[in-house]
Length: 428
Image 1 (cartoon, rainbow, N blue to C red):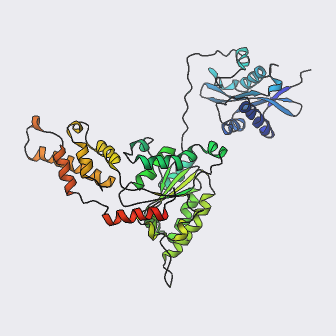
Image 2 (image 1 turned 90 degrees about the horizontal axis):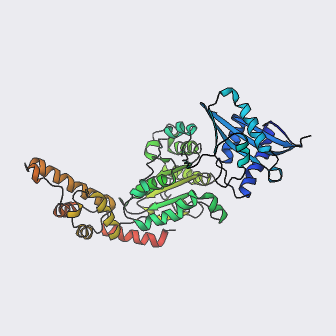
Image 3 (image 1 turned 135 degrees about the horizontal axis):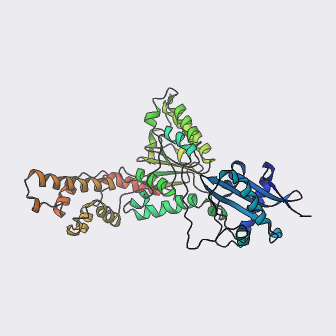
């Protein structure tokens, strides 16, 4: 009498599937499909199990799409291998799918898979010179409606790489924020708690918003910007609308939530009677701890005036890091000019001279000066009746002229105050 038998998957077999999946991991094999995918197919697609008494000792899981079938999972416990269970499981699950009229049944297995015999016994052919490619879709279909209602979006995947210069800031954000969130399992092994909230502070135009978007791009998480000025028009009031917005965000699996100019709703509380905005500040202070309890989310608040923030807002336990984003150094300005100067003319432009002339400029100032030089060169070529053969893009002098005409966003006083803020308030 056969000591094991094949039957259909039952809901109480979930623990047995988990044990089989973990046995593969313990043997150094990395299953192609995640456990969640395997369990979902067990419930919705086709699954059979081999049982010895009441114990699940093997399982085969498959799904069908059009005329193609896929073996999602095949495993037997180590002590039961070599008894033909795998072959029988494959035969059974194929029989369950016969009514689909499949033209092909395929399987993807780890490269180190040793149970090839089960497949060859069922007539599977090993295809050589094939590679398996996989890409995770960041937002599931069920989340798209909620994301749209929040005004969120997925940003281009290369946005992080397109941030010119600012190498020190990028490295800090990569190490402190991106790494623990992108490698959450590894971080947990090392005892690292992934960040949940961060404040970016610095003078206007230094790229705080750009960095927030770049972090979302780097993580491939939806980017949701919260606009307090828009929420203020809600019939529930700003505090109520803010609370509801964060409840809606909780429906997303992952999100980078961004609040710019957060000092508008988290300024120092003072005065008798209390300011109407104090209720909003109180609400935000209550929202942040609840937000921190949800994995897969990051709150990024940006401010130009960190001194104006309420002290309770910045304390430990609410924000993991308070990171300064300052003016670009010469290396960063070189990278920025290299990005904004057209490739057709850059070889003829004295970039080091522009870098020196634009000291104290913010990234926004440099972009404005570069765009202005291009615009002026275009106007000159068209309206000065320059012959087509003599038309040219901007040259060094054009850029120096626009630099001279561009008023720096950040004054010396603001720069000095920013350096003092770093000493007093930064946590990196």
